[in-house]
Image (cartoon, rainbow, N blue to C red; front, side, top):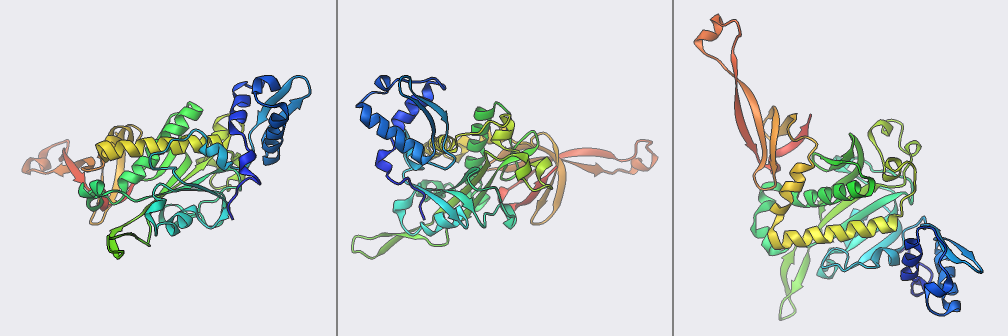
Length: 367
């Protein structure tokens, strides 16, 4: 069932933000404003939800720590979404947030829906791999959108599947991680965000199986709209011991990067949703190509020797460019043989050639 506070109306998030801004110092009840009894009741409600607030009869109140569970009111506070985040649902336990979002794709009213969960029992990543983290430790989020006709007109789906949605989530998440940790977050093809070679986030884009239909003037079913779900899993308050032993050398979290200090997941989720919405609006105005520079700049593979497996062949070369429309540009070395090779002490020469590979043809890319 939905994870909501007992009485959402009593959660005064503005009061909470005022306490947070004091950086651990006490704030008098007078400075907190309003009727003393009402302020005290609001503090009671915040404390019952799980926020750590110290109170003193003379000094007032001081913020000591975030709630361990996600707070829908805190996530929504201050958001001004155009699309992503217009509706936000927070669940205690689901099989997969992608599945919940996909089931909501039968109506266009859910365009921009964000689904968050404290725990997933069957979370999945690329190629069906399981995604498992302790409950109440991470951001497990899925976003449902209905890409407009203008994007479909660009024929990106024919060339690159939903690569632009993966790039949108990867770029946004990488920027978020960098801003929250001060570390350089990189994108590992096609859908992992890593810091210093260790995975901190994963992305999975899936089409919703049930399309939405816009009713015509006569009430009959009209235009068909296909929803797409973008899932993001971000390790937040996960310590090293919580990762499976085989993943510990290859995984990290925001808390680990921050020296063990717990992160306010509700504040983090609000920041991520806001950034996703801003980037999505840029794409609506300028097209997915606006992602090319940040997507390319954050690539973990750019400039390195890679192995690319396509539908038809396997190639090795240096990755010199990524572009959502043009695909990958690979500098390959091939043997150029001539009649003089047999007499040359150097043997056959190598010549370079550039190969353009459409994103839809790339099955694997690795160093």
